[in-house]
Length: 330
Image (cartoon, helix red, strand yellow):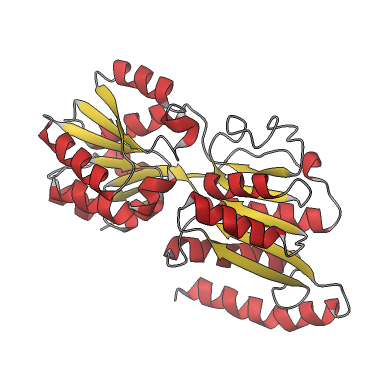
């Protein structure tokens, strides 16, 4: 453990008894978390720790004056719907939904319990809220990306791997934002300006992912773009392994892929989203209405590059790009 993390943990531990003592006698509030992924997802486990830590700083202690109910949907719509019904049936004070699958399931399950979503792209287009400034109903939260992000991913991939001339965009039309077209216009515009040919590659399961990346590898100077999508996230290890085996430069929207050996990612700092979600949960528990809390756009992005993977692909990442990276894995 790093020194500053150790010191922080000591500080949190020493403060904990004081918080509990100060809040003895308070009504225990119940907060649900419906996580889009499986419970073995290490990054999401870390995000829950971040969420708890942020709540603690706001005076809420799990096992003290609040009780957290956590469920894991494993990237499956039907499981998310069942778990959403289960959580709603417990009469929670507020529930947090991670990802589009969870947010959709919770919207279907309740019209009254306040819902705070995180890691949702295009919440207006998905029908979760009326607008970002005035969400309406019982749902608000923290969005992931604007459509223009599609151009940023292509620009970054071209900077890292300038030899690419074609880019395949991998997504599942059933689970991707806007059924896969949310980033389409920005990607097409960027492709033209970067002299790239981009094409959509719909996939729904492991077999289709394997066939798709195998086909991409047959294209001369091909690259891969993997936007946010519950399906590709679920198969992240497979996507990364196949990209490495077929020597396809790829850029991703989430850190998980690069930690697993992917080349690079440029995306939202999801830990920050969970810290912000805790602030909305705090305000709701203290009486705020969801329609008083506008949907927030992300403000903190991070570029992460895996130099070991770059070397394996025969790519020399420009010094100018490395200088702007928030993290370099060596």
